[in-house]
Length: 384
Length: 128
Image (cartoon, rainbow over all chains, first blue to last red; front, side, top):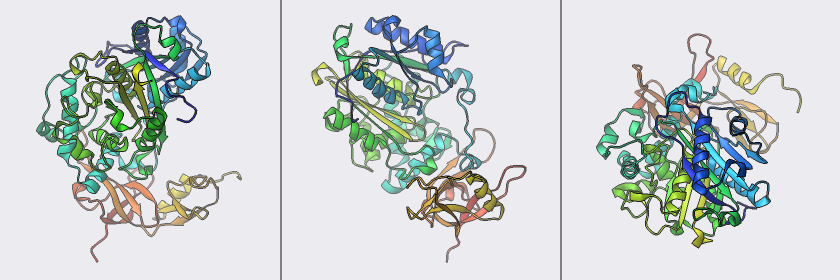
């Protein structure tokens, strides 16, 4: 992004809150606070060090106020941008800008959701759109299904290839002790599961879980003296293309294309330089679209690219190594958890699912119905 | 911009009441605008002209929604109208899974029971 300097901010602490199905009566702000407590412990900083606060949740209209009150802080810098699941990638760019300008010294990005415990109906406001709601689209699934229908029509992408994305995610999830799904999954099981919105069965769709977490960011100078090796923000990009699926120009090309280009340009890197790929997989078509738009394969080739286990463990390209929104955790706005996994991979903390020799990672967030896209490229000290 | 006396949505729905599918035309952009609005998203101009569509279009994308409860599966589609605008709708008069991308379709007004306003649906254009 124009104005942001490569490496001018670093991620120094990360943590998930409780995930899956959390204790009864927990609030989204409770989960944010838990994530912040754990992430601060991860870098041995304290709440008194935090002077930048960035957060988003679908369950609180003024989450910045609620979180600041809860923590007992009055932050010098605050940002509660909310654009769906990609919000936290936008937050990373905004925190980087604030750190670069000296508006704050230690910034926290936080998220919490109890959508499973309280029920999806209660977790987010249903907005009435007179131009869409009468047709009863089952959102967000129907919007992504429409995009999949175009991809299948134009490029011959098959339901089996979509299912391969779900199977790869499951195979990664089986290597992640905190993943929601614990049993293996086959292509046939994906295809024969309950149909939601054609071509998607329930196995093409992300989980509905609780969850949250926090990411701590600071300047590269401060980062050097902290507990763990810093993970540097090398590149950021973003793009908004529409809000409603009926206003998306071409359903086979997403804002990940310009977002990725901007992030690569800032980082001075290209797709072949990236070691670990974390993509927002709300639906199986997402992974295919983002692999194409972020340059890992040509447009239209995503379906064939993911077939035969290429993005599964032991494949050529490690994608969604935590098990993804499809099999690990999806609390509604999943982007923060992609940043956490990318950071842990670069710190070599991932145990059985650790990618060997990884120095660079991409964390790509998606929000709404392919509406907001934001890309963050991270690197180890060696990549600075 | 002068004070607005009738909302874009109200004008759109008044056309539907008459059995018409209305859209806006931006003469500066030489482009159709949909959904109806107060200013043109291509130029920022407030000069938007109302037009009535001939009601012919092509299916751009399609899906079948399978409700979790007992009710029957139904179609949701995006339709590209010949005048150059796209809208969400559904294709009726055939099985929802028989709707195909590229299918030529024609507008028909749907008048729901109760207080719900009318909305546009589409049916296949018969083979010439």
